[in-house]
Length: 263
Length: 77
Image (cartoon, rainbow over all chains, first blue to last red; front, side, top):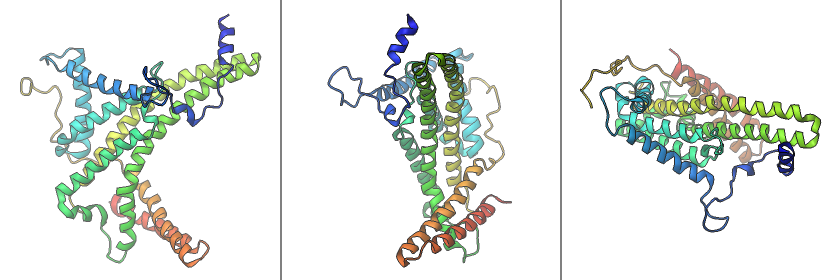
């Protein structure tokens, strides 16, 4: 009975999944289908709210001997402060720890929606969100560079230690790789990982339905496909944590480059 | 809260200067950047002079070489 229902429900499962599957319909309870309030919007708002509430609540009454929540919040901040900010930037990195910690937490939570049941899509699988993170980090490291070196930052960033006659060839490459590739690769790396993660889960879930629809004898393969979905969900969790970490570390590394003394 | 208890682990503020992490990405971006920038300029020259990809080829090779040189200068000893 249950299987029969599943098959009937699955009869109109679209396969293969396409980019259209990332453009979710409006879920606004008011108004029609062209309201901007989609599941993605909701997930972003939930992420912001969850982070604010979590850190406020766990630090409301800080205790000498921290309870579990406070310990978790302190561990997260301490990890970013000591193992990313200070490790990458050095002493001055403490100034940037709040930004880096916020960035890490927000990217991690928005990524995490990709594997939370019933949500199962990350806002970061739309390039708009990673692009904004990347632009913020990009503006930050350029601002920090100009603040530290003044107009001399252009020399630090663009002029490598090399004989003068090669410089005309090298300076355009430096400009391209420091000011154009950096924000672009930050955004695309995060976006592509989240996009691919969601796509993989879609392929294996919908593929299971497609096969069982095509031929009942393929049912074991369908079950294998759904088991793969579960395995891939765990893989996705590793990628989610890794990408949040990589984005933060690279931002810290760019800030460090802006603060570095001339060569 | 500050100063009420000794930190449970060293604060690491006095750690030695950071290692140059993320150098792998830097190397890749120089290598690709070199070829893309000078290959692109070569492509523009090709369009301007009507040559069939000669300038672009030269540009990509020169750019690749310059990228390798940059990696050696920036990341080498």
